[in-house]
Image (cartoon, rainbow, N blue to C red):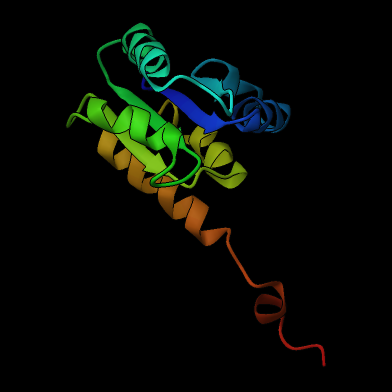
Length: 136
């Protein structure tokens, strides 16, 4: 099974995973948070991330979800990006994690799993007034 590492600033990773596991208990098997302190030392954090990636990879690769492109969390994992081994998706949100739960046992390739998670996350973003129609 492809494991997922969620890397974010502050406690966001822990809270996202807790919320997702409340909705889908299956996520406890393969989704792991790594919340970085705001004042994290970059070199120490890079070692932590590298170690976690090695721990989680069971041969199918690791999907890494981060909070935002260009942020520390993403910058820490980008050097580990490797086709078929580590894929990075930025902009993590709760709908992505819920979709992930339904995809864990499908035997998808790492890149395809990443694409489907991104699509679910994008489909969940709306301007409510446009989505529901004008109420004015």
